[in-house]
Length: 265
Image: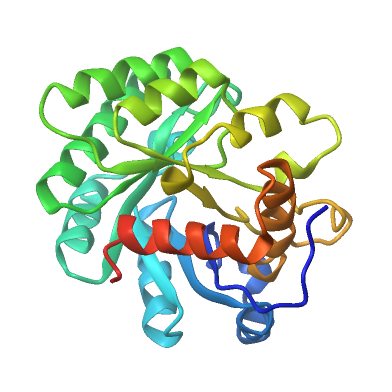
């Protein structure tokens, strides 16, 4: 695996720093990230409450940015007025992205038609605000692609596929739609040869990295719980190796991609 002692700029495009497991040591987790070379972290909302917490965390820590949205498995719990609050937060200037949104057939936490309704709302809100959207996709690649294709008829799409685990054909379709593709710790796992092959073929200007912390700790830190943004370097090392690219070059490229997507430059 490609390794280097050189400090590389790392951008964790997806972390749940609002998670209660970080409530007692959030400052230390962010210090660890900075020490590992992480310059930016997107704190991802999954409900109205967590979205508001992400904004609060982003205001406290300069390297953190907020995304606001309702995760598909949380859509059945939406209360009257919740969506309007998401819209207000998205319009406030305090968020840099919409989501996470998307679809999920793995868990049975929310009727699928409700997930589809809220996915479409997020996509429309992204178009309205100009903020990129963050897509969750689990066991439903065809469904997600169908909705993205439909949304593309209303205008160009601006977003990323988070913690991508789909196949090569799905990745090509996402790329054709103008989306970025982000990989989390799962791509480092021994069983993930096929996913690494997908990652190797993503154009250099469309690939991103993330932790999805506190979940999906990367190899060789799979026993570390909770996962944290500092560990994104291991995913970067794995992908640089798979793509036969110098680690420093890969880090700079993914950092540049994320800065462009989130309009931070």
